[in-house]
Each structure stands twice: as C-alpha cells, then as structure tokens.
Amino acid sequence: MTKELENKLREEVRNLLEKGKVDRVIGYGAGSLRFAATPLIISDKADVDRLIINPFIHNNLSVFLPDVSGKVAIVAKECDARSIISLVQNKQIPRENVYIIGVPCSGIIDLGKVEKLTGLDRDEIDDISWQGDKVTIASAGGAKEFTAQEVLADSCLGCDAGGFREFDLVIGEMKPVAADKELIRKRIKDMEAMSPAERWEFWKNEFSRCIRCYACRQICPVCFCDRCFVEETEPQWISPLPRWQDNLIFQAVRMMHVAGRCTDCGECERACPVNIPLGILTGKMEDIVEELFEYRAGMDKDAPPLMAAYQPEEAEDLIR
Amino acid sequence: MDSFEPKIVAFCCNWCSYAGADLAGTSRMQYPPNIRIIRVMCSGRVNPSFVLKALSVGADGVLVLGCHPGDCHYLTGNYRARRRMAIAKKFLEYMGVEPERIQVGWCSASEGSRFAELVGEVTDNLRQLSPNRMFND
Ligand code: SF4
Ligand code: SF4
Ligand code: FES
Image (cartoon, chains in turn yellow, red):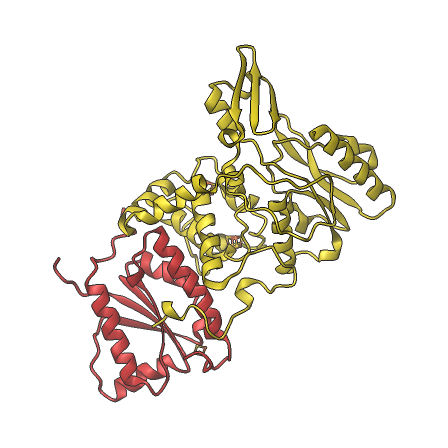
C-alpha cells in the first residue's frame, strides 16, 4: 500500500519538477536511524526516487516553508496541511507559492511505543507491517501483533482529520485514522479534575526537567518569529537560565503566542528530549480557542488570524 | 485561613480606567490601598507576559482595566485585549493559576465609584486565597 503511494508521489513530483511548476519539493527521505523518516528537500528530478512514504513520517514539514524560496511543493498529512494554511493566514507564506500534496494517512506509528511494548531496540526489529487495524512487529524472537491503537502516536489518537479542503492534489484516497479520542482526551480531563494547586505542582515538576533547548519552539511551524521573546534583553522577560520558573513562563507564553495558530500537530511533544507532555497544553489551548471564539486554526485560508479579529460581543462572562 | 493583604498590580489604560482611578482619588473615594497602578496607553498594550511577570515577582493578583467595549480611544484595543486576556485567564487557570489572580474589567473615566468598587471586590476575592507563593522554590 505505501509502495503504491510512494510510486504515485514520485510520479507526481517528477511531473511537477519537469514542467517547472515548482522549484523545490519538501518531502520525506529515509533517515539514518532504522525505520525513521527524515525531511528531504529536493530541486533536481534525479532525486525524486529518494522520496518515501511510510507510517513513520511524523515530521510536520511546514516548519521549513517560510525559509524555502520559490514555488514549493510540500508533502503533507492533513494535520501538517492545517499548519500550512495557518502560515498562510498569518502572512508567513503566500498561498500561491505552495503546492500542497496530500498523503492519505492512517496515523503515524510511534517507534518509542513499539520499543516499549516489545522490549526491543528498533535495531533489533526486522520489520513492522500494518494490515487493517493490526500491526505486526517481526524480530529474531518471532512476530508480535498489536492493535494499531497501541502503537499509534498520541497526536494521531487525537486526530480529527476530515473536512480540510485546501489540498492541491491528493495521492490516493483519504481514510479515517483509528483514533481514540477518549484515550487522549483523558490526559486533559485528568488535568482539569485536579485543583489549581495540584496542577501547578504538576507543571512545576514537569518544567523542572526542561533544559531550555528550545526544540519545541524550533520544530513548531507557527513559532515563526525572527526574534523570539525569550531572547529579548530589554526587557528581559525570562532569565536564560533553565530554572523551572523561567521554563514554565517560557512555555506558558509560547502557548499563548501560538493560540489560534497552533493546530495541535504534536511535534513539540515529540521533539522534547525530556518528554514534557506539551500536548496536554496544546490540546487544551485548541479547546479554549474553539470554545471561546469558535475558531480552528488552519482550516480557512481567508479567515483572519485569531488575534487580529474580534466580535463586538464575546467572552464577556470572563470580564468584570 | 488568616486573611492577608494582597498586593495587586493593575494595568489601567490612559484614557478611561486610569482617568477613572484619578476621579476616584480626586473625589476622595475610599478603596483598598492594595493596588499598584501601572498606566498603559491602552488595555490592548497589555501583553500576557506582563501578567506572568507580575505574578512571578510576587504580585498576588493582576487587574487589567480598559475602556468599555466600543469606547476604546484606539477603537479596538480593548476588543483585542479581551481575546488575549480571556485566553490568558483560561489557559493559566488550566496550568494552575487560581482564576481570581487574573482579573479583567472595564471602567470609564466617569466611573470613579465603579473603579473603587472593582478594586474593593478584587481585593476581597484575593483575600480569600493564600499569598502567591507559586514561583517560590
Ligand atoms: S523541548 Fe522540552 S526541554 Fe526543550 S525547551 Fe521545550 S519543553 Fe524544554
Ligand atoms: S515563543 Fe512566541 S516569540 Fe518565541 S518564536 Fe514562538 S511565537 Fe514567537
Ligand atoms: S484606550 Fe482604554 S482600552 Fe484602549
């Protein structure tokens, strides 16, 4: 199945480059670690066969768009495509310079979960194959079968794809993801059930581990500022030292900055080297924005950015 | 719990709420001395980082005041402030900041008494909480 998609993608991309419709293509290539996919930017059609599609293409490639010049085709899952439109809405890229190639996505397999479930390192795994809702992991010790839900990335379990209309081309047929929203919403619900003091304690604890590598910011497509507030010195909003207080303020402010731009794609949580559950924050922020302002980032390229618009009457119950 | 005297940082817009505070003062209205006013040109100037900064350096609560909807001197600053602050309030509450610590309100230049009342209410609300030790180690 993924081979078919891969061939189709290569054919379409070759075509686009040959006809000069795009200057560059942002897609996925084979990574250096086993199974892993890595971002690949090509402009020469000789490189077309390096493009791959498999269930490990987790990167949200839209993060590269503002930095890649010319007409660009980009391989996008629906969640990534929403980030692209979010960038268009926020005037970071002109819509006409981007050619969005949609890939049907049934969810991304989280290799971390696979390693945990099998107790194997990814190098010890021979093959991961996915049929229907079963994923089979083959190794020297035999084959083990799991349900797709057991190995899907958290952000895919919360997937609410469907209804996105901005693809320029879709290779193959879009299919629903074996999402388990209840499971993933549980993280947010559990948080809401705590008292404010418990919640604060939770985040204090989490952010005590943060090393302020800023991977979450760098990987974020909608953290597009040339100069981030954390590097400002007059005023200096937070100390550059990774004290938990400053770490927490950094992330809280980052979340408020990306409110209405963030599509909860899950990349920040995946990028975090110390596994801070940032998805509990991005997921909640998406909820807040939707509840208060009936707004969903990246769905409509003509909708103004959340913070650039208002309704005369809204959110008044929060105001004295 | 022993009640305490909260320290409140208030961001007041120049054109309405700061003038409202002025009126309360010149009219010799009584209101709690717990408030420290920082004048900003418009409530739309208030960055959520101001709120976090104030809380992190020891304010027990933050009050953001602007002109009533429709009355902003810059026409739409308070509408923008409303979106921003509504999100800040909800989101920071989710992270564990008690909602009472972040307050937003509207107060016009002629509403000296409303200003005094608002400050009274917010101070009372905060007295029910404990002092802000959120950012202590
Ligand atoms: S990726 Fe994780 S450790 Fe790095 S700055 Fe972000 S939250 Fe902190
Ligand atoms: S954290 Fe805020 S200032 Fe920094 S890059 Fe992201 S959006 Fe921009
Ligand atoms: S000037 Fe008062 S809110 Fe804008």
